[in-house]
Length: 168
Image (tube, rainbow, N blue to C red; front, top):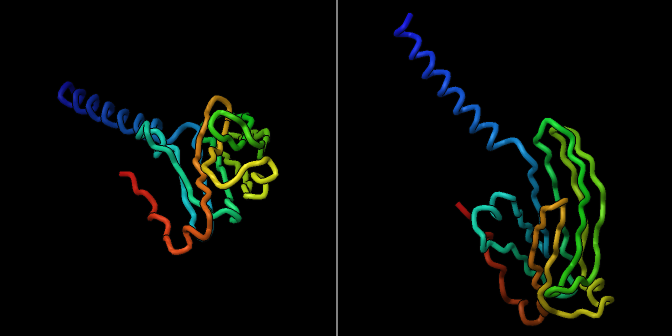
């Protein structure tokens, strides 16, 4: 019996480590941003932003095109999650326009999706032109920043967008 006790103890520790890794890697609040500009869709996940401090997601669009966003929040906890999601466009340190402000209540292991579109007409109404803008997504105390680079369609008509960045 005493010989088997150490075997059972080692087996219990091994199973405990596996359970810790599974729960630590799965439980929490996760978010994903899907961006479509022109014919290209880009997915930005939380994991990409956390691995590299200097990672700044960006998307290029021709002036006059629509940039469509979809923001998904996934509650992988055993408790309810209440939050306010606010989306706005910034140029340097000045807010240009507010795009979305919604309260969301997610039950345990539930998800919510918010969609919006950024157009050059909205920026023109605010007195802006062809330039780089930051779309800020605020969810509680978490802030996500995505750079939207508008360019003139005449200058970029022959250029292809770069392939999506794969981060290992």
